[in-house]
Structure formats: structure tokens, C-alpha cells
Image 1: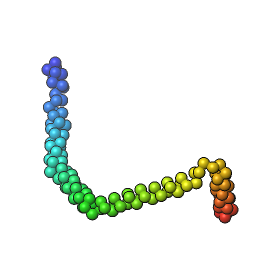
Image 2 (image 1 turned 135 degrees about the vertical axis):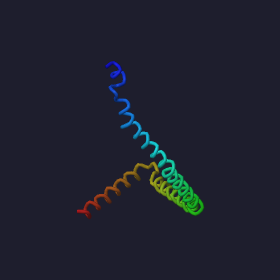
Image 3 (image 1 turned 180 degrees about the vertical axis):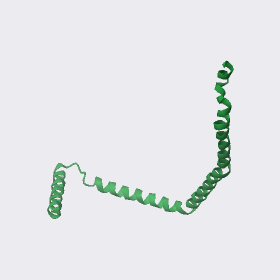
Image 4 (image 1 turned 90 degrees about the vertical axis):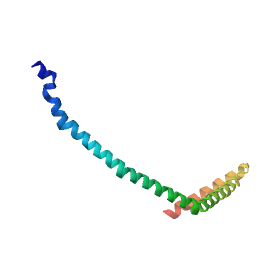
Length: 112
């Protein structure tokens, strides 16, 4: 009986046949699928992405640069407009606040 216990109750050969070998076969099959199918799909999508990037670079770069420049010019113009009422004279700030409150009151009256 000690030999029987020493050999894991004779479970090791059964575990090898029933569990280990089938799992190893499935792992090898999945590795083949990974190498032959998935790797090609990844390489193909990378090549497609590269071609699309080259096309955008050749055709779309001027448009993107122009858009960024237009946004920068608009931002600068809005900054100039925002600095215009900042004169440092207190009575002008009061007049601006009164005008803003009047517009707000008008909007509230019109919305109701």
C-alpha cells in the first residue's frame, strides 16, 4: 500500500491522460491559430492604418494647419475684445455691471 500512496493513488497517469495532455494539445492549436490568423490580422490592420495616416498626411495636413491657425486668430481677437472694457476706471465697471443686470432682467422678463 505504501507504493500505491507513493504513486498518488495511481492518479498521476489518469491526470496526465485526462487533463494535462488535452490542455497541451489545445494550447498548441491555439498557438498555431495565433501565429497564422491573428498575427496576420494585426499586421494587416497596422499596414492599413499606416496607409491611412500617409493619405491624411499628404492631403489633410494643410487643412488641419489652417484650422489651427484660424482658431488661434479667433482666440486672439476674443482676447482683445475681453481686454477692451478693462480700463481700471471704477465708474465704467459700475456702468458695465448695471448694463449686464439690465440685460439679465430683460431676458428673465422675456423668458417668463
